[in-house]
Length: 296
Image 1 (cartoon, rainbow, N blue to C red):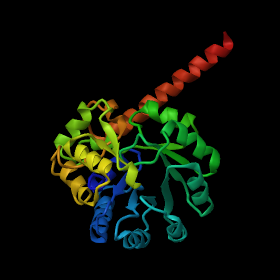
Image 2 (image 1 turned 180 degrees about the vertical axis):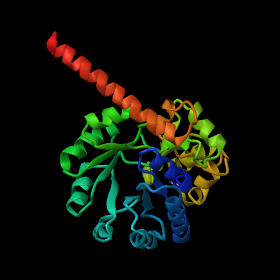
Image 3 (image 1 turned 180 degrees about the horizontal axis):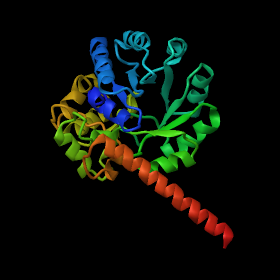
């Protein structure tokens, strides 16, 4: 949610009963501080900050969230091992994103408070395993809470994740199509029109796999990838071009396969409430069906 997970959206999610997460991406610490301050003006609920460890200013960003006493810090795009102890000593809950059970077990031993098990269905940077196979493996490998991510956009996804051993879920693509999200309306429409099959993977051969909606830029990227050409020119600023400026052909449109489940834009509060209400209804139905089956 780089560029998109700003204070307005974060506060709306937290006010609705979720845990909003600021998406900092490659933003400078000054912007992160501004967004933390604004979030605190908009909500008195807990919220978090995501730090992209590939960012040149990642260390400064981590120092900042420790100083600010941010309740939850999620870490992705690199090895968070060296940062866990410092975050815990600052009273922040350290929650790294993981894509395999071995990494999850290692980080749990180093002091992670929870892990986000992100399946390959997710938008943005991804691993190899699907959410369905990844979550139960990680749940078996650690004793800390597991948050399921990747391909989840509804209450049924929440129920499925909990059945696999997760304590909760993380949603990104679903909140792009919220009224509070500053994503370009053209990007939101692309997600709504998607059937999920156009949420393709690029960059696997260079060790930087990314899932985004297919367009002219991804076609050029894949062709260059097949030729073994340098791909650095594709990364600079291309996400901003797509999701904020709305150039739907020449910018990256990072989104997950759950795009096929999203049919409209609505307030973040309604999204959170619908997920919870649907999950509660499913749990009640499953309980009735289970009891009826045993009694017949």
